[in-house]
Image 1 (tube, rainbow, N blue to C red):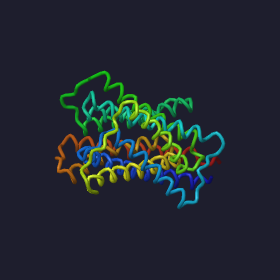
Image 2 (cartoon, rainbow, N blue to C red; image 1 turned 135 degrees about the vertical axis):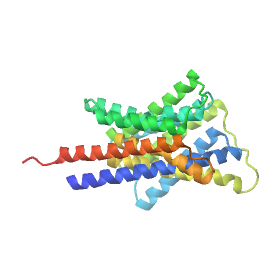
Image 3 (spheres, rainbow, N blue to C red; image 1 turned 90 degrees about the vertical axis):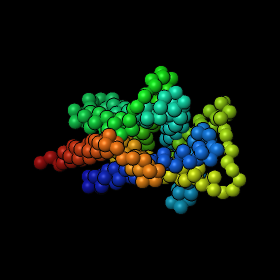
Image 4 (tube, rainbow, N blue to C red; image 1 turned 45 degrees about the horizontal axis):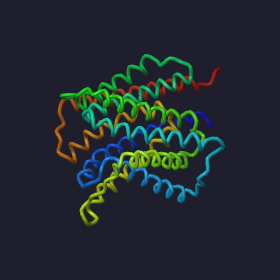
Length: 305
């Protein structure tokens, strides 16, 4: 692949990652409406993976893709899907023990973990600026979300940490083992193993709850949640294919910033000074990181002589 084409694909990957962050933010804002209509959190998670399977099947039909991966890649895709299912359940479980704000902050250690995994794989140390941008972005998420009256329950911290690790492993796994496979087909395999993982949890815990009022309107919030989750999932792992795991994970730090903006716009929540400051730190860290990454890649591919 020509150097110019690689650079263009990397830029496209960054755009897709930002779009995925926005779609995830819409999903985040819409989820409480599903809960208010009588759907339990595990039911919503199960429905999202089911909708994702239908979405990816439709995409494969439109793109005339066969549900076949290169030799040896199917197992990697299924394993990565199990990680995403476990990550979702871990984050969901953490909210039963610790505040949502703390769970989100712990979750957003996953960009740092993804970068560390890629550095270990490449047998190199992360650069100083690379680490600084990740720490600043993480701090920005913490400031934006806020940690008032935090209850440090070890179970909740462990579950949120598990969610972060599983997301990092999934993104890293796709970046290393699945970048040469079509991300739409990969998403199909991941959705299958993801829904099986969540279904086993739902059956084991008896947490499947559907008690909406009669009519179509109670189902609309669930459909909105499922739609935006599915779009975000497909975009996110397409971004990994184009830009790599650490770059995608870094840009996904924008998700909490988008949530704050959408909550102010749609839910009437206040844009406080800490939220604005934290959002600015996240955006600044992402921009600096991608400028640095672009310059570093340009140096690497610059022809000698």
